[in-house]
Length: 309
Image (cartoon, rainbow, N blue to C red; front, side, top):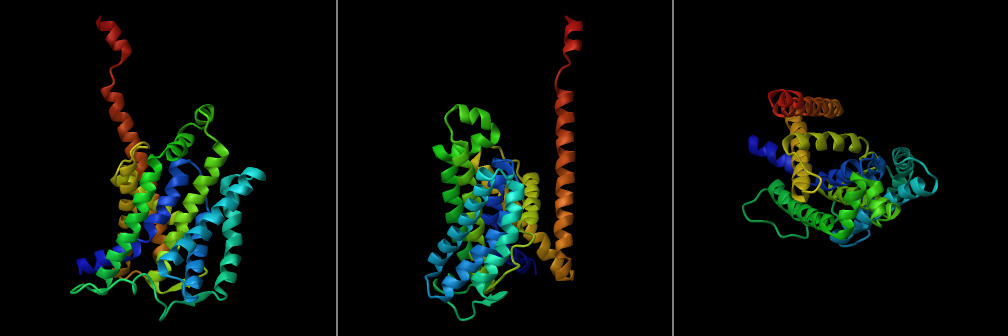
């Protein structure tokens, strides 16, 4: 029973790691909110679906979905930089507009991938392994490759510039960093990863749906906060950032799988997501207060030190 729950959490959670890593890029590294991911996630899945049906190689279909998501992020950056619309509002506008775009791409609210080759049919079956275990291994290969590339990028000069603008944009600009270009890059990267995750999801579940992106941003924030409770990532520690997002994503999916296995109706999962977000925020606040109080106790009082001299 426990093996079944863990496999379900892996199959549903692994494709979401790139998506939530993209959300982390804007939410933590840039300290902003980008709701475009809800639209780019669905758009990436839709592009992957139609290209698969057209006969494109499944791996190339994933690339096409990622590029479609990245274009959505660039459009959001354009609204922000050239029309001076805040990223939060620009992302909201894009997520609303992308619903219609995704519907036109699919041609119908739901598109099936039944009998269409996917990444899972291109890999030979593993002897003695069940379907879900095999699917988890293949998903882990793709996700690991993408996460490794993401971690390498953050260690490059451009990646360091991206992180520096989130910490102190004024200081980064004084060092010659083009903040406008970094904004475009960060939104492109975040939404490209969302599109990639959408492509993995449609190949995992065997269909694409125009509503598949709804609630992705809130779920991602909840998973990130949950991951930060499990792993305290530092801005300069790329490995801990990746582990934080992966741990939070899988823990969040595990909570949902356990809730379903306990008999909770699927329609109540949004309530579980909202509750997870509330608990994570409250726990982080209490943990921060506790750490602050502990540091205050450990820091000597200058007045007392002066009186003893």
